[in-house]
Image 1 (spheres, rainbow, N blue to C red):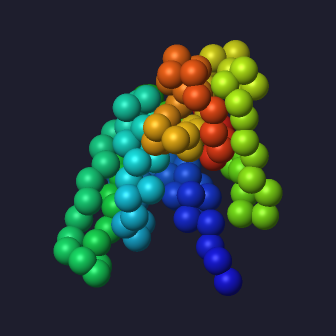
Image 2 (image 1 turned 90 degrees about the vertical axis):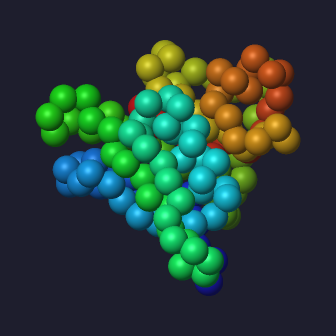
Image 3 (image 1 turned 90 degrees about the horizontal axis):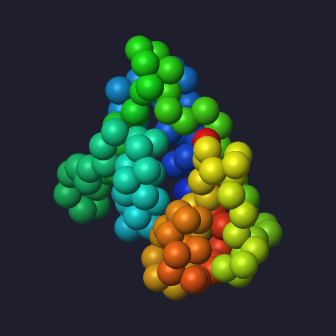
Length: 131
């Protein structure tokens, strides 16, 4: 049985924020690290770090809050799933919540946001939308 590691990552971060946690840990992979770095750059998470040595390496993600107990991540929707991959060309990438949110896209140039993909004129697999 295959597991959807990106869904586990984004839902885990969202739930940790709602529970008021400071950070959350996940099994490490380069792909998850790249996704978490994009979220950090956009301000949705506070910190991203690789902890431990192989084979027990862990990705630790610090949760970002607006005010005291209000997490910056309001909601997240997985677009491309294991059972159905969703690809968009550069012209088909739309804004999320009128620019308030963003899409995270896996492109040939790496993991990037919808705005970066439009600027670089590349399409790819739409992983999820976050706001």
